[in-house]
Image (cartoon, rainbow, N blue to C red; front, side, top):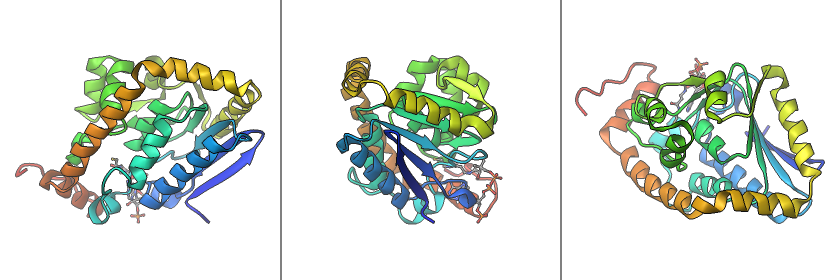
Length: 254
Ligand code: COA
């Protein structure tokens, strides 16, 4: 079965990350499929809302680390950047259901969703520094904005995970539910949105986001350039090598 499943019903396109044996880590093919799904959802008038979901035990372990080593994203037209630009500027509502770990892009993509429902087992983390990298998806702008600088520093400089309750407190998630119910609750909220007048949804979202829409894309570009460079540097190579070899990284020489 495909690693990304899409299903359209009741005006909602549900996009399911379906690579559970690899903790829903995201390959370039998966980013490409998600970018294509967003493009289809934007163009198709019958699709009014997009819902991203994973499994009740795992949302996503972030970018596939093997690909970071062997097939790093090349340039602005690479699937990951197509996906990130697509979700950041998607005009219709986007809902997410998040259970278990949401690592790296598994968390940063949520800053571009309109409604987020979390299982009580959700654990969010952005360990870019611990991987010798820097933030992506405009998270260096949006995380401090949402959480305040010092909590953002814990999340982004220390790479400390935070749980569903903390995410609720800072406003990253709308509601915490039992993991077995998260996808269902998110689906039900998405259906409620899909029943509303689409032009009003689109205009309201545009007005809420317009103040910094351009800034978000500029930040994403700047982060992307740094991230791309850092992927090839010794700290990141050490971090990825350590992950693949199931050992702790040693940054003493980088
Ligand atoms: N890329 C590639 N493979 C990954 C992966 C990733 N980001 N995350 C997990 N996997 C793979 C593991 O290599 C393992 O594969 P194997 O069974 O062939 O050995 C499998 O998924 C299960 O992972 P494991 O680490 O044993 O699961 P866990 O339940 O103990 O831990 C996580 C789950 C998500 C906490 C842990 O896998 C993790 O920290 N992953 C890396 C997250 C990360 O740094 N992502 C990059 C962000 S930019």
